[in-house]
Image (cartoon, rainbow over all chains, first blue to last red; front, side):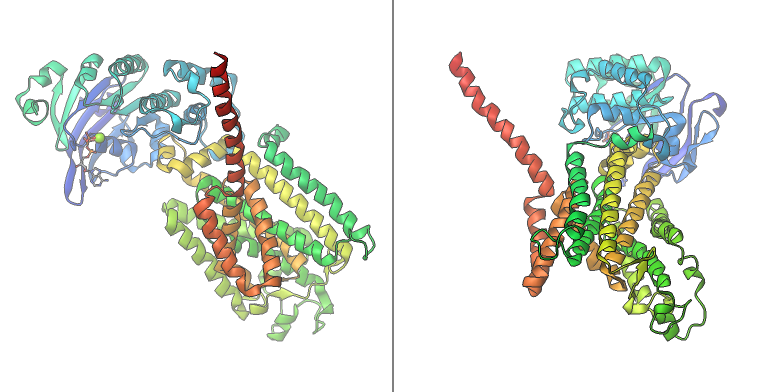
Amino acid sequence: MSAQDTLLYLDGVSVSFDGFRALNSLSLVIEPGEMRAIIGPNGAGKTTMMDVITGKTRPDTGTILFEGRTDLTSLREPAIANLGIGRKFQRPTVFEMHTVWDNLELSLKAPRRPLKTLTYSATKEDRARIEEILDITRLSPRRDRPAGSLSHGEKQWLEIGMLLAQDPKLLLVDEPVAGMTDAETEQTAHLLKDIAGKHSVIVVEHDMVFVRELGVKVTVLHEGSVLAEGSLDSVSANKQVIDVYLGR
Amino acid sequence: MLTRFFLMGLDKKAGVLLTVLAVLAVAVPVMALGTAPDSPWHLSTHTVALLGKYLCFALLALSLDLVWGFVGILSLGHAAFFTLGGYAMGMYLMRQIGSRGVYGNADLPDFMVFLNWTELPWYWHGFDQFWFAAIMVMVVPGLLAFAFGWFAFRSRVTGVYLSIITQALTFALMLAFFRNDMGFGGNNGLTDFKEILGFDIQAASTRVGLFVATVVALAIGYILASAVVASKLGKVLIAVRDAESRVRFLGYETDRYKLFAWTLSACMAGVAGALYVPQVGIINPSEFSPASSIEAVIWVAVGGRGTLAGPVLGAVLVNFGKSYFTAALPELWLFALGGLFVLVTLFLPKGILGLAAQLRERLPARATVTAKPADQKGV
Ligand SMILES: Nc1ncnc2c1ncn2[C@@H]1O[C@H](COP(=O)(O)OP(=O)(O)OP(=O)(O)O)[C@@H](O)[C@H]1O
Ligand SMILES: [Mg+2]
């Protein structure tokens, strides 16, 4: 298939840290509107993959194209974010000193240049959108609390809310349900499925119940490259996958 | 629109501070000019200049708080911007001396005649005009800060390394300005000023005028800084301070935000320096010394980093203490200052204003604690 019609196109991407190959000729294609789950053992390179897509880490070799034309490997993080790629981190990172509301307002899709933010004041639509996201993430009662005072699970939700506020074309979500209760996990799965209608999503997760709940195509990473790809059932039946990951 | 922008940052703290400044702007002129010299209410010209000096330092502390308190850039070289602003004003004051210098040269300041220079260096041109000097007071420190910040922030120098190169910057400037051939009067600096805008610089009324100008500059600086900090840009700055890389992933070019705050802060420091020079009557390279910048950091820490009003208070209190100590026990001042810094870092991490806030929080908390058992009794 040609790179033109894809949303995200990784081909032969490699990254080494002091001789250790975290990504080893990784190739991956995400279609517009697709939701993809990525699984794999600790150290498989899942987070590093997100790092190279978002510009945090520069790949040593390989091609990364967004929307079939924009080469991400030469762009800096803010430029990549402004193309429409949003990210939730494995360890939830919110602005602890700011209120929940301000965290969302900072994330909200709006001009990012200093002189624009200096004179910014929230429009009615902006406030309505933030209210909406507060409802979706169930953080309404916490809106005026500093984000640092939230529980771990609430921070996870706030970070997902920040992603929603950004309204990116592609969402990279790293371990969204770590530290959540079963009920919260299920809610998160519903939330992500809702989002997937309008956006493309890549979710990294170890929680198999959660991955099953998502019910989407799964890619198994191992030692920095793709080991298997397909439905959860088919990759679960794969002998190699059982050996390196599921069987342990 | 513009008024709303400037008003949005004003809280209770700002109300108190601006009221105090307004009172000073009225009371000091009345006490200095409207009372008999033997009245207990009389303020001497010396005292007026001293108060003016404190307020210049307060403006410097405010500018430092903008970058240290809100962006997390611990500048150990902020006195450089202050001093450059001071030199720009000093150059204007030198040109006003005209032929009244020792050598009576109408075009060249004395130190240039002494060095056998025959014409004014190109960079001294324009400084005979007040408006030009007034612009340069902000432009020179601003441009230097912009260039410095451009390279430092782009190459992502942060933390201790950034602090060290700010210190190196002010140190390098000090060495450069010590050289006679730089054309800034070498280690003597610029002094023996006669007039500012045609007014005798020694006259009590001129000193009062300079004091009021300083009060106004500090008030404007405070209102501006509050507005910036309260804006969405200010929220981005705080986010940069706490988690810079996260801000980049939201699509903000954090370098530009840092550059904005850094340059604005340098311009404010330049204005502070420009008001300082006519009130103390001299500017020389020792103002660039690393110790001056470190003292400014102490004022901010003592008053309360990240509170804007705190650093203003800190600068005035510490310098008041300094005036007292250097008169009474000169050899002890540095120890007192060092001790104060250690005490504040250990016991008052949020400075005086932080302590005040803590006390205020604790009082109602105690009230609710005592209220609870009473409720239970009622049940
Ligand atoms: N900046 C770095 N410097 C050195 N090594 C790194 C760096 N980032 C990642 N690594 C290494 O690369 C490998 C892949 O790490 P990565 O975080 O991508 O794994 P992961 O699949 O996300 O694992 P987990 O499931 O534990 O989150 C690991 O061995 C890690 O130690
Ligand atoms: Mg990971």
